[in-house]
Length: 218
Picture (cartoon, helix red, strand yellow):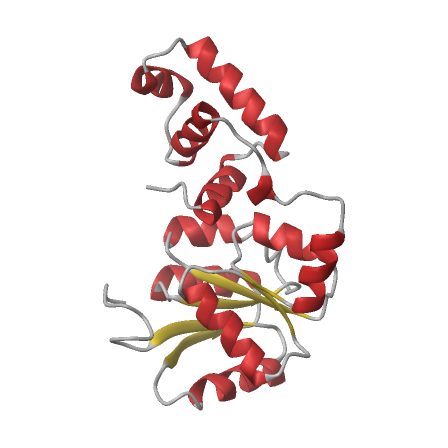
């Protein structure tokens, strides 16, 4: 894959990951009708082959079934992002559940669309993901908007907490962050603890996904 803008100066390179051949064929057919806008570089029917394909092809877009053999779809995303940090992920699923959608966005997916969607909706979800935006099925978006839960994007981190989180995602250790921010290591630990408490997760993979999603990454 080159650095030209996908979908503008070259086709958007896509990997289709779903354990049902008929679904993969359907997505491929929708994409191939778009006059060269997309090109399918690989298909995968299980999690290990999906991760391997992402590492090999480094596509612009991964369309991913939420439930596949060989592991957790969302659990495999950190490995995909490590292999290809600019990867856009669109979840394509039958699960119309705000909690699954919330988990998918937290894991770094940009779009969450139902398999019942018409081709125009699929394409909208795919194009938005590649462009760096987000897409949620309208009914799910409404359910999430009216719910009491607050999304990860709505977390109110202080400037220092945001900076510490960004540096954690970029691989810095507590001592390195302390040196970079010219503060004591115990101060870094305090900021880190506060941020983790607000975000509701602590692993570096989840923090990295959050940083990518809210635009804090370098």
